[in-house]
Structures are given as C-alpha cells and as structure tokens.
Length: 167
Image (cartoon, rainbow, N blue to C red):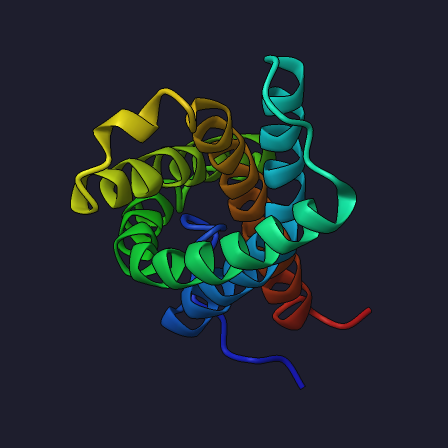
C-alpha cells in the first residue's frame, strides 16, 4: 500500500511534518557518534601544538564528557535548526537535484554546529577558551554538517521509497 504523499509533479521534494521530524531525529542520531572524530581532531591539534598529548584513555574520557555536553546542547539547538531546515525544505520543494538539498542542509548543519559551541562559551562567559577550542568548534561544524546531510539523505530516500508506485 502506498502512503499518501505530500509530493506532487510541481513539488517533487515536498515533505510532511513527520518526515521533517524523522530527519531531525536521524540528524541527532548521526551527530552523537560523529562527535568522536571532532574530539580526536581537537586532541591531535593540542598534541601537535606543543600541548600535552592526550593518552587514549583520556581521549575516550574527554569524548564521553563532550558527548554528554554536546548531546544536551545539540538537543537545544535541534529545535531552531529543525525550524530552519523546514524553511529550507519549503524553499526547495520544486528542486529535484539531491546535491542542492545536501549542500544546503549541510550548510545549515555547519552553521548550527559552529554557532552552538560559541553560544555555549558566551553563556559560560568563557571567551578566553575560544582560542583554545577553535579546532573543536570547526570540527563540530563539520560533524554537524555531515550529520544534517546524512539525516536529509536517509529521510528523503525512505520517504520517496514509501510513496513510490509499485512496479
């Protein structure tokens, strides 16, 4: 049985609210494990910059701490990021090319991935930490961009497959 689709010939990439929420949940689920490379990049930058190289056990400890902190902050950022993703999706309903969607959703993820730690530092009044966390902030931007692109791609494929005619 084919589910009722919000997509039409004029709007081939339209989406439902459920699809939007699925994309947000998948993006968050992809983000969490991808934080490990961000922490590894940060640890490598510290070691390469003359700081104390982190032992593997301490990198795992730092990752677990960052996972908790980033996970909570990411949940807070997920609401406005999803609202922006909805606006992006509405603007791109007529655009069939996946590459355009991937690029724009990745850019949304990068923006929120960079802004969220900066907001955290401002809330914590830790402007001095900004220079030490530049690699981590940029790595989180990259990770969040990748998670947003993966979340969109998987959600899009599932939605289009569910509403495709049999045959």
